[in-house]
Image (cartoon, rainbow, N blue to C red; front, side, top):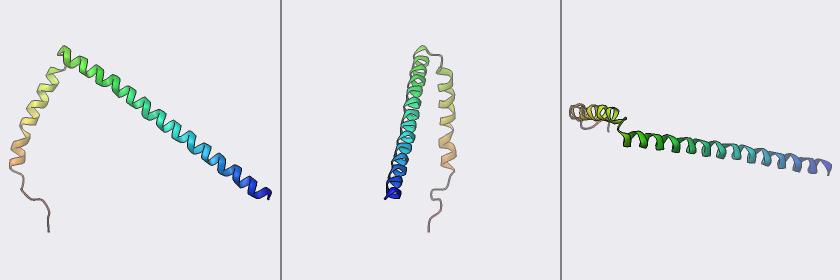
Amino acid sequence: MAEHEHKGEHHKSGHQKANYVMLVVVGLLLLFSVVQAFQINALENRLESGSAVTSIAGQAVSQQSAPVARASAPTMVGGC
């Protein structure tokens, strides 16, 4: 009977370990979301002030060349 009680204690500590791991994972996800919120806020402030306009214009130029490359691509890739 003492063995059975010992197994129950081991099983309980396994649940506690899993709970701690889940708490750490949730904490890290929360930390990452807070950091990203600050990064988005900083990016929005730079866009409003106009300091990030040059990088956006550079992206627009590179996106305009994409349809040209897409026009020469085959219409069907793979298939049966």
